[in-house]
Length: 287
Ligand code: G3H
Ligand code: ZN
Image (cartoon, rainbow, N blue to C red):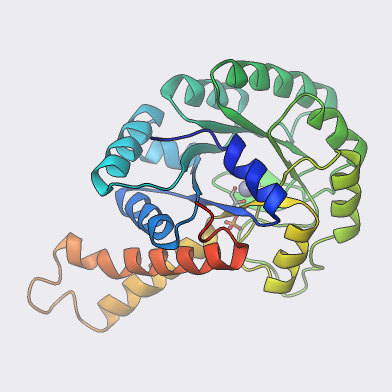
C-alpha cells in the first residue's frame, strides 16, 4: 500500500538520515525508482511535479499507475506518492485524486497569503491522513516552470508555518533546482541551523538535491534535513545511458529499436543512481 510520508520522515529525522523524494515522469521512472527502493530496502517518496502530472495524463492516472505497478512488483518498502511544488488548486486536486502526500508551494505569495493557504491545505490534507510540505523562502532556479528567486528563508516565518502542524518544511538555504553553477556559494548552514532551532526540530526538506557535494549533504542531514528531492540527476543519467546506447548503434542491432530495449539502459541507470543516493542519504536498510 501507499502511505503518508509523516511516519517515514519522522523516523528519518529521529534517526539522522534522509528519505529521497525522486521525481517520476512515466512508467519507466516509476518502475526504476520502486525497484531501487526495494533493492536498497529503503522507504521512498515518488515526487510528481504538476508538469509531470499533466504529462502522465493527470493525477488520477498517476495514482492508478503507481498503485498497480507497486502491487505488480510486490513492493514491500513504504512508498508515498507526493505532489511536488503544488499550487493551491493543484494540491487540492492531488488530494482528491489519492496522493498520499502533497507539497503546497506558496513561496511566490506574500507571507500572509502563503500562511493562510498553507493552513487550509494542511487542514484538508490532515483530515484525510495525508502528509503536507510547505515552502518558506524560495529555491533558486527553475523546475518544470516553477521559478524561484533563491531567497533565504526567514527562521521566524518558518516557525510560524511549522506551528500550523506542517509535517515537513522546505526552506530556501541557497539550494538551486537544476545544475549548480560553477560559482555557486554552497548551502548556508547558518540559516539552516537557525531554522532548525526556530522550528523546534521540524523535519526539513532539501530541494535541488542533484549535484550537491556529499559533505554538504551530510552536514545538512546532521542539521535536520530529513527529505531530499532529486530530479535533474535522474534525467541526466537516463539521457546519458540512452545516448550511449544509440551512439553505439545498439538500436540498430537485432531488435534494439524495440522501445522496451531502447529504454532499458536509461531505466537501469536511474535504478543504480537511486540505490547509490539511498545509501548516501542513509535511508538504505531503514524500511
Ligand atoms: O522538487 C524537486 C527537486 O527540488 C529537484 O531538484 O532537479 O535540482 O534535483 P533537482
Ligand atoms: Zn524542488
